[in-house]
Image (cartoon, rainbow, N blue to C red; front, side, top):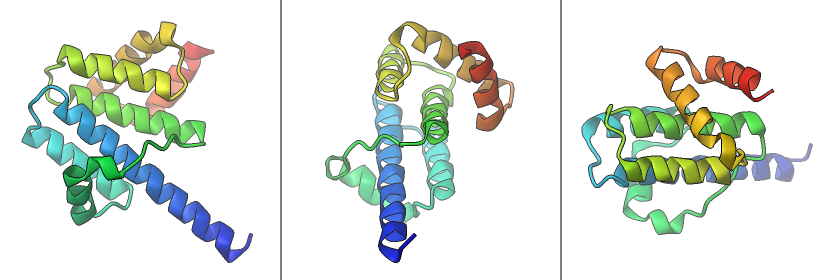
Length: 145
C-alpha cells in the first residue's frame, strides 16, 4: 500500500469520525436540551475517535460544514449506531424526536426499517446492563441471524 492510499484511509476515517460527531450532536440537540451528561458522553466518544475538544467545538459551531459519511465497514457502522442509541438514552429521557431521528439513522446505516425498533431496544437494554458495543454487536448478530 502506497503512502497516498494510507493518507486517503486516514482522511476517510477522520471524515467519518467528524460525521459521527455531527450525528451525535444532532441526536443530543434534537430534543431542545443538550445537557452536561450528553456533552460528557460526546467528549468521551470524540476522544475515542481521535477528535480533539477543539475540533468538537468547531463541529458544534459549524455542523453544516460536515457532510454525512457512512462507514464502509459494517462493524464500524454498528459501533456508530450504538453510540447514537447511547446518546439518545444517556439522560434516561427519550424524547419522541430522538426516537424518530434514531429510527432514521438506523435506515441510513442500512438496517431494515421493519427491525429498527427491535434493534434500538436491544441496544438500549444492553447499554443499561453495562454491556459494551462489542458485546452488544454479538447479541444483535444472534438476533438478526
